[in-house]
Length: 389
Image (tube, rainbow, N blue to C red; front, side, top):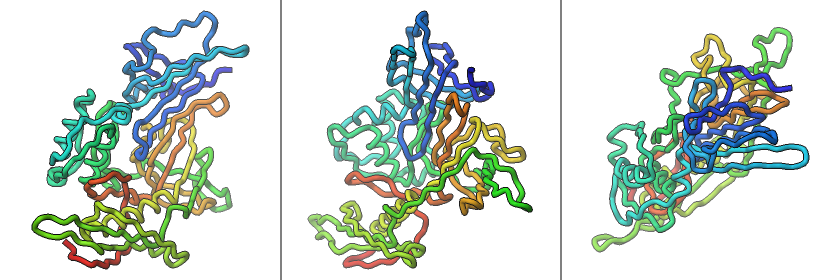
């Protein structure tokens, strides 16, 4: 028996002006920490089925849920399978970040460029025209020397420039490249819904509205103290400085289990930069140490009297959680979500939630490559063999 799907949740892939929407299964992923949102759809074929001529790798397409656009990109793979029991077609694709991930950046060695200039020189030649910078103009005027080595991807170059301004890139459903940061303001980004996992005891209020929850915690990449060692390179007028050092402390973990890490960062050329880098690395570990996974029916928020009611689940939203059995009551940040369809579960949304206000980007200019960090204002101690400036 075919799975009954709410028309508002029906997924369509638009290719060449035609909508294809009769799927046996699909997954549509979006995550702020993972570049290139991706989608996969599958349908069964009969002996008489004809695959549309425009469904070929590289073709531009859109993915919609009901009337809402959720992704703009291109088809990556087309897979046809035939065996004794079935005949199926599977189509996979990604959003606009795929081009930046796959393609090399133009060489721009030794040039000092602002964020807008870097975007113009790196992104626009690859066909990306819709760009929005969600940041104060004073921030994005910061300049850094860009050294692009042969083979560096356009995505890495863009990320380095964004991080130098304390920002991060992602793509909107309509294909717009956005360079900005998370919004934790109750005024502009209030919680969109309440996820309830009720213990079902007498006197408790609220009905369970999730299919399941999973709380994941790990200490593997979390440290009570992170110390960053840096240095400045010498010039003709002034010699370099060594012994630059600063530490960030997580008081919660320090009281329970001291775990220390020392990092040498040749980009840290002052105590202030060492301090900022230590905070970012410490918060990186905290961000990775906790994840709440929740599964709900459908793809839209069912929360009457809440601001998100009827909207699609979207990364960047904030969600209230009431789950005493999991030991969780509070506000969490929706980092990623997957829309899925299966014969057994129908349409569902898998949500990846992180601690609220932990993912905060700080300006960190790049001379060499490293990954992003987040800051949650831990306690900081400083030591130095040189000046703070």
